Every structure is written in C-alpha cells, then in structure tokens.
Amino acid sequence: PLLRKDTLPVFYQALATEVVKAHRNFKENQESDDMCILQLSQIIECFEAMANYIRSKDNRALLSVVLKSSRLFIEQMTKRTISYLSSRFKTHRSAVVSILKRFQIGTKTLQIVCSHVKIVRDIQLSSYVPALKKALEIVIYQAKALLTDNNAPANAFYLGALKHRDITGAEVSSQVSLSNKSSCHITIVLIYHVYRWKDTNGI
Image (cartoon, rainbow, N blue to C red; front, side, top):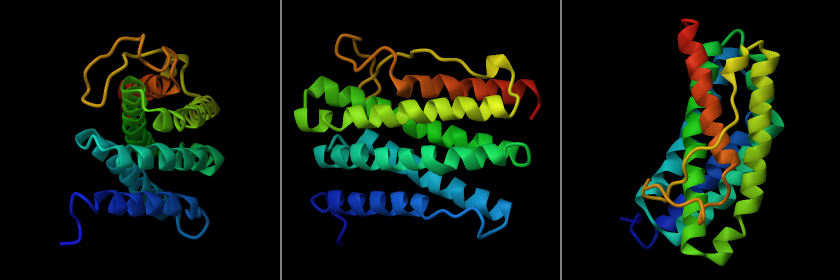
C-alpha cells in the first residue's frame, strides 16, 4: 500500500492542502442556504479531524503541516466564514452552533500543539506559533461580534484562560506554556458559553 509510516507526512500534507483549498473556494451564493451550510459543516469537520489526528501522532513533519495549514484555514474563517455564519445565524441557528462547536474542538487541539512545541523547544516549529496565535486572536473577536450582532445575552460570551496541556492532554506548568491569555484558550471558553446559552433557551 502507498500509505505507510514513511509516506504519511505526504498524504497529510495533501489532505491539509485540500481542506484549506475547499474552504478558500467556498462560495455562499452558488447553492441554497441549506446546501451551503452543509458544505461548510463538512469542511469544518475535515479541519477538526485533521487537527485531532495530530494528537495520536507525535510526528514533527505532521506538526509542521498542521501549524502552517491551520493558520491559513483560520484566516479564511476571519475573512469570510464568520461573517457568513453571522448572516445565517437566525435562520440556521442550530447548524451554526454545531459548526462553531466543531471549529472549537480543532482550535483546542491547536492550543495543545502550540504548548507541545514550546515544551520540546523546537525553534523552527515555534516560529510558526506567533502567526497562528494572531489568527486565533482575530477569529475569536469576530466570533464575539457574531454573538453581539445576533443579540446573544451578555453571559453567552466570556474571555478567560484555561489550563495548558501537552500533546498527550496532560496539564503542564504555565512557566513552559505560551501565554496564560492564549487566544486558543479564549476560543474554548467562548464556545462553551454559546452552548450554555443554547441549552438554557431550549434551542
């Protein structure tokens, strides 16, 4: 078979490239709203799976791919996707919340990857982290705007810091973590409160 341990990085790179490309080529006006939401949900699901796969493979080549490709993916979220989701929030609220949940899972994994890179002191991989953190910071404030624009209650959004963990999920000291105010952490808290609002209001 072509997919082997030594060829895995090549396949993973190809997958990451296609996921980013699919997101970049997403066009909201070519299909009905239902089809667009479905297509976007599938793209986000692929992003989540791609990011989570790294948890079981402590492979430097894969870490490099996910750090670089995730930034490109998240930048597409900030350029178009968050705005589109906001415009469809009232008519497709459950679907939008589901998409945000999947996106949150992916960003949680990125936080773990960022912490792991810091722990192992990989200089080259660490060089990709600032741009990724910046992209995450921008997307989180756009997500806040999404809630504000759709009249979400005040307690539906909260900025805070969560515990830092390594790639295995174990908690690590803040002295070796990236930042106690990491945008990745803020993303997790945000989506948690979106779901609390959803459940409270019987949506």
